[in-house]
Image (tube, rainbow, N blue to C red; front, side, top):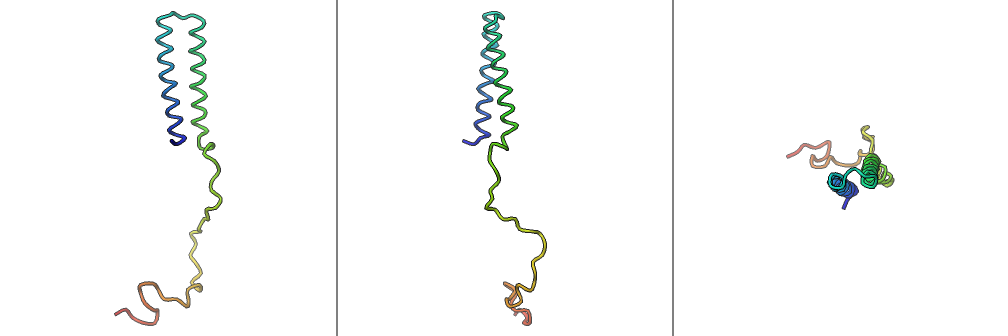
Length: 95
């Protein structure tokens, strides 16, 4: 499972928790204990949102073994002794 999938799963669970706490609050009334649970669930939801924003940083650094290839043209003198692939030699014509 990827990091994005895990964060989405946690977000869904927290959404379910908040719905359940809201139902409990309606059934039990707005007592201190229920309000406290609702507040704690809200804090967890905010924390997961912060994790989601930081997710690119959690993936890790970019791979250092990748080599970037510049867009500038190569030096043509590197291929003076070779044939153009598929076209034949420079001084001969294709059949």
